[in-house]
Length: 376
Image (cartoon, rainbow, N blue to C red; front, side, top):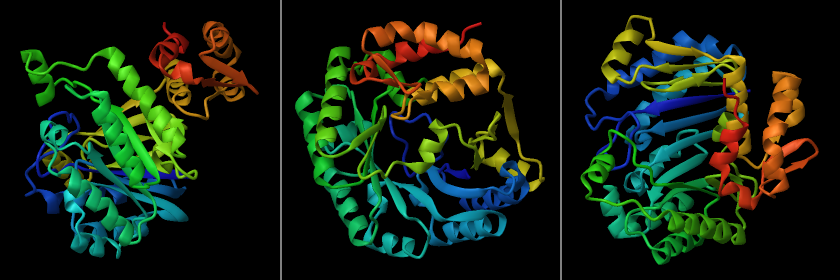
């Protein structure tokens, strides 16, 4: 079973921290939708005839698409792929797009999971991040989604912001818990090159949060969400009642997926591919029935490193039996030689031939995963 990712590269405004491929000009939208539909026809054999178990509309801001846009895309999906009867179908959305009228139209579409980009419940933080919504609007949006019948809702939070205090962060966590959603993703603010935030940092206009405070915030998040019944199943992700993101979990578990739209990535189980990050060039190439795609053939060492990196981030860990069957005894021995000190120190467990980070290990996970990777 495989997944489909559809990149929607449109936003009303651009957030200060975002380095994803997006555009605020909506004029190419019709041509973009047509190209995505055509790309499905051209590339459906990438995932053979396998059953599609997840569809994920990411961005950008997928909630900038209309009912008619989505209907064209879903009609094309049904014509070219076989969907699992219980397929998880997710749409990322901004809170200010989710009013009663828009949600009414969505109910006529097969979405069964919403991922809402809230980031913060503090209005000053939202203004700094250049988000379009207020804290009140975010809370109202979740309530509207529930009353519209959605019972699988995820929200995004962000911590480690300049001037963010533990009190503010704790209030954000409390508000998120009070919303009674099924899933929370929470990420530390990153100063990505090319973003407005990075330029402000280089100019000295913003100062990153203290590292010790970042650790305290991460620890408080684990404690608060765990106490509220969330399972910490991936370093940045928490779910109630086993409602993990099936789509994102497929990335971490090394499953196949087809990426559609400009800048979208794909994986066929052996090699990676990605579309050109340009709407105009993407539309032109698809129109000529010659998708503009770059590929990376993964050698054994790179595949091993991916297996370590993705597995150690999750509660499922790294299965040593699978590792040995895929990469050989020498790779397994290399992994065990380098992980042993972390097992001895209580940062990693090895139960039933599965390596997993302990609570303490999560805080130094980058170093652990780096040491387990194969270096030529």
